[in-house]
Length: 270
Ligand code: HXC
Image (cartoon, rainbow, N blue to C red; front, top):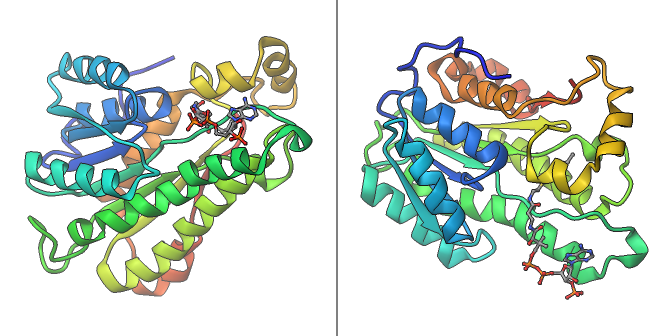
């Protein structure tokens, strides 16, 4: 259940965020909370109707928001969306990679192209967005100081920590996302002052993923194995994202860089 934010309402004042998959599920909740805490928000997605509805929802809170249609699998879309975000809002401070593809399928029924499709969306898509955002989000980028870079946040999962039925493609894709997070945290943290973080949500209620992947009987059974006997909520993930995007999440010291590079924030099972 949503409660009043524990954060001050201006902690992202003046920040500009671009979120892939920002029109639905966890991505929309992060967009909403970023906006409610002062950020201007650009959301990217494939479906215009979903984007339009999400932008109206964000604007109903007075959030400066735009929707940009595009597919993270297409480098030209990634480039255009990043450029349009900067054109609209003047700079880019925060990139959140929340776009994901998923379906339940056994390995023997999954074609190599189905496997590749999910890696293309989750893993290659995440890297492509980071790649296209680099020149804007690094220190000295347009609208940035010469010493301060922005923040990249990659949303993965916990499926790949062990093994999960019918999720071989997603587990492989999310493992790659975590690897991208760690390596960019090391290299772009060092070279460009960009903080790169990850959040790895466990099962989160009221999302397309859970509706598709967790039929009622499965999610009820799995709750028995969860420490708090309940699913996580989108709000929980958005609050973690908000912390990481805020100045409170900006405290890193050179000596801690190796720790930063492996500091994915996991929210396994609630
Ligand atoms: C088997 C499937 C399939 C299915 C697609 N494919 N759906 N194989 N079972 N249900 C295969 C196709 O046969 C094809 O391979 C290949 O994948 C590409 O399919 P397309 O339909 O052409 O791809 P596309 O239209 O680009 O759609 C990709 C998509 C996407 C991945 C299916 O539409 C999608 O998943 N959208 C839903 C987004 C979503 O659910 N997001 C929430 C993510 S939740 P062949 O060989 O036939 O060409 C999440 C949380 C994880 O990530 C953690 C949970 C705990």
